[in-house]
Image 1 (cartoon, helix red, strand yellow):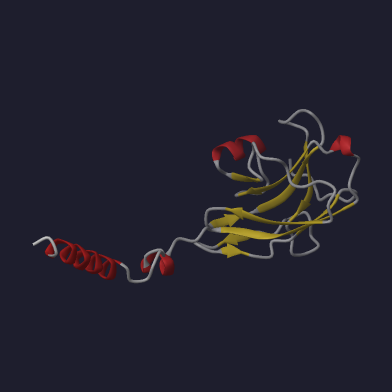
Image 2 (tube, helix red, strand yellow):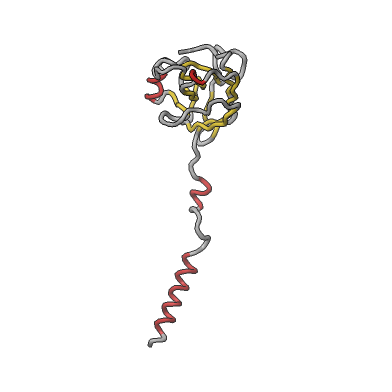
Length: 170
């Protein structure tokens, strides 16, 4: 009887191990093949003619649903604008030639993608556009982007020339 228990325990452990392990540690098949993707857009921002450091308080990529924006702060707070990097995080890198970015954004149309510079201490007023997404030379009307559902719109590239800024819509 005492030999019977170790054999039963070993048999039980063998059944438990070999019936419970099939592919090791990995996510279930359904989430690996059909998992959610993040909607958004990506690209490169190229910079030239950087201004003096004292006029670079903050630098953000801002995406507006409507053009021209009516109230930058109100649009950002209401969800009609997306700020990247998000408020509370450090600004875009300063004094670099290029920066690559990805902005998570709900699927839909965005009429104005702009790099905005805060040049003074008043966070509510001291902003100007220093670059915008535009596929042609008509800088008065920026190009619209269409963010796809569960995918990334690529090559939303922006040129920033601090000496030759686009028209100021705000």
